[in-house]
Structures are given as C-alpha cells and as structure tokens.
Length: 197
Image 1 (cartoon, rainbow, N blue to C red):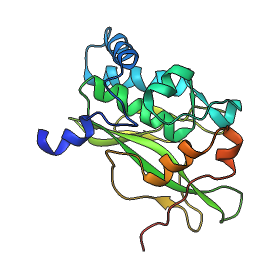
Image 2 (cartoon, one colour):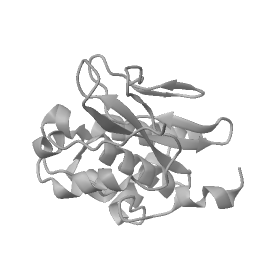
Image 3 (cartoon, helix red, strand yellow):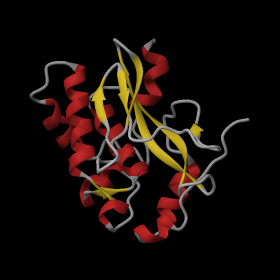
C-alpha cells in the first residue's frame, strides 16, 4: 500500500490529538526499547489495554473522548481507549485506524451498541485488528499477528463487524462521549449504528 493512501491513518485530529506533548513523550518512551515495528505496536497496545481503566469496568469518571484526555485521566470507554491507541501508534509513525463491531447488550438480540477497537497497518500482514478495551474474566485480547485475538466475536442476530477502517471516530460515538458527564450516563445512551444491508 502506498504512503499516500495511509496518510489519513497517520494524521492528528481533534479526537486523535497526536501532537499533544504528554502523548508524544509517552509514545517515545514506549518505543525506546523497541527494535521492530511490531515491538512498538505491542508496547503501545499493552499500555492502553492494561494501564488505562475501562470506564464501565471500574465505574470511573470523567467520560473521556480525546486521546490526550484518556491519557491524562487514565480512563476511557472502549471508544476512547481506541482513540488513545491510534494516537500513540500514529505518533510513532505507524498507520492506525478505528473499527467498530455491533454487539447485543444482553443475552438476546436487541438492544445493540457499538464496540470500538483498532486496526494497525503492518507491512508483513496488512491491516490487523487489535482491541485495547482491557481484559477481564471471559474477555481476552492479545497482539499475536497474523492471528486476531479479540474479546468479542459477533454471532447473534443483528450483530456484526461494521465495514471499513476509519481514520476518524464515528460522529455518533463522539456525540455520546461529549454529551455525557458520567460513565452511567454513557451506559444509558450507548451509541449504535445499523449494519449495511
């Protein structure tokens, strides 16, 4: 894949604010002992997965959206954690995007919500999905290319992977994160989007 087509996945933006000084410093620190791109990806992934608390798992406020705020407050929903991972990878010159799954929120089908995760471009494998939401009993994510190890596998009626790898978060996701003040408000208004027919 040529560099031009990957440029959007290396850019800084409002939510993926690559230029933030604290974020830049962390990106450099995580890359320091690394020898290969995959070492840097692993270090950034494990930092976000393990060191940033998932807001719902830990019942933690404030609600964060911008990557630098996720880092500052050390908490975020899956969407926000994916913004931080994308920013750390981009700060290290590694193309990274955002992916979404549509999942049932209960044991049956409806209602549904979106789940946010990442894709990273690896020269040896192409786009590879990884999920930094945070492990807990029954949910495990690892960086083990070319094999994807994701915590969720859509399989129920109405569930599925949204197509594409996005350079920017979906507006419906940003809207929920920016309009809710507490984690329980987000849980009551989780974003959703229909799968393409």
